[in-house]
Image (cartoon, rainbow, N blue to C red; front, side):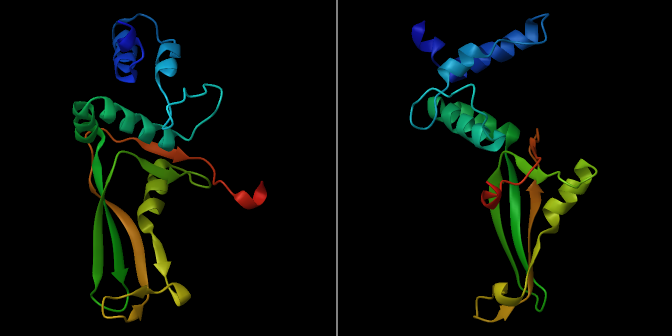
Length: 170
């Protein structure tokens, strides 16, 4: 029906079904693109390049809004858990906050491999000087802030960030 033709979920099913059973190694994505709208309900502009992380999050939100079962499928297959850690370098204090994720974004500029990018991702940053971490008792200490992967998803999406967007160089 006409309503199915405008459903991004249906169009994704058609797209993947076609890729699965067709002899061709490509699919014309125009039906999906015309069915997919942004957060304001406007059709996406196919000629405009989007950040893959932004697009994927918008797609996952849309699919879950269309059918809650789709959200469960996305979480069950692509969902992992980060452990955001702040580790004091001067005491035994460790702060851990868990955060769900569907994709890992790693910088690849000046890196020789994905392993090197992932190592850099989990290495974190030092909180020192004016940027010290404040303990619950108010004491400021040097600390390391990092993100670790607590639970891997069944299927991991790794977004390779090729460059940093810098407003100063525009």
